[in-house]
Amino acid sequence: MIEIADVHKSFGHLEVLKGVSMTVERGEVVSVIGGSGSGKSTLLMCINGLEPIDAGRILVDGVDVHASGTNLNHLRRKIGIVFQQWNAFPHLTVLENVMLAPRKVLGRSRAEAEAIATDRLDHVGLKDKLSVYPSRLSGGQQQRMAIARALAMSPDYMLFDEVTSALDPQLVGEVLDTLRMLSSEGMTMVVVTHEIHFARDVSDRVAFFHQGRIHEIGPPDQVIGNPGRPETIQFLKSVR
Amino acid sequence: MFDATVSLQDVLFMLHGAGITLLLTFWAVLGGTVLGLGFGLLRATAPGWPSLALGAVLDVFRSVPLLIQIILVNAFAPILGLDLSAFTIGCIVLATYGAAYCTEIVRASVLAVPLPTRRAARSLGMTWWDDLTAIVLPMALRVGLPGWIGLALGLMKDSALVLWIGIIELLRSSQIVITRTQQPLLVLGIAGAIYFVISFPIARAGAWFERRWHDQ
Image (cartoon, rainbow over the protein chains, first blue to last red):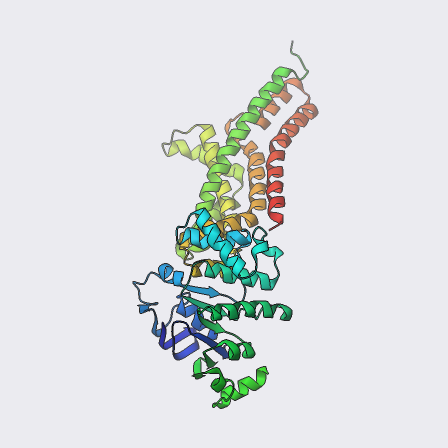
């Protein structure tokens, strides 16, 4: 379970998170929607400790992410994250990209890592691309590779940070299909997205972010289907 | 009284000088690269006053002409009680000079690795060291190699300046042969050809790596 309690975070004078609280249960899919700069992506970075927080607390399975004694490298093994820019390692083949962390972090042998990586790449539909370099892949394929790379660590949680925002429109579908597949397999997911239809279809709950606060959180039929707050109504109008 | 043609003996003498040039280059490039790698990583990953101070010191080595550095170190080493051979002094000065340039090549190459790529590595649970060795250095190598090859070739040719402290390397041995034979064009032609034969494989090796990486 991910427990976020009254988290504050500023970049310089700009306060991007102004007291955010929410929980994500095991097996749950929570989508986070909201305008650009509302703090959604920052929250994801804080969940796996890529960004420090100024106040509040984030617990993952009871472990305080931002406590000084927490081994972040250890914690990150169970929290996969996929970014808007897929951040392939350009000097490694697709297979090597996915093998790297199991070898370095989990200490798997080459053969074990290769088996894991092949399995995950097959899962996201890239089995025929194992030996090519990322630069030869389309954006959608690179993003699926990034998902496989995170899955290779067998994480308990997956965080998705606007994973379709940098893609050509015709490539969005294949990545969303991969996310749908993961949610149907019971993966716990926090999905920051601008794809309102997707959020409505897949999520157990939807959180609406506005200016560093969660204005509404609840089942998609409520938050997207029948929003109560004027900010939510305004935002949904603007993206439709 | 004396033979004014370039003999086989002369060519062998020049080849011996070329051997000294190669040795000087080897130590200069090795020392310069090892120091440059360490200093460059420090400059790129640990900003703050030690990094700035190091940058300022290295700027001195980049700004003062190499010939002056060689002569000054050669003059001051005995005063400081250091009993160093001219060859050792040549290697040390060339290596320091090379390190000053290599530091900037390494620094720029490491900073060219996009931060989000490094974040992605860390987000997978990789340690700072894993990120450095598996992601940053391999990616930086591809950026920095052309500059490093240029530096190595430059050091090879600049090593000729140590002739001023009495080391008989390729250029000095050529001068000696010219003095005796009075055939400057032929002798310098041979010397130039030897320099080329040394440089060519280094340049080709760089091009080979770049071609290999082109697919990525």
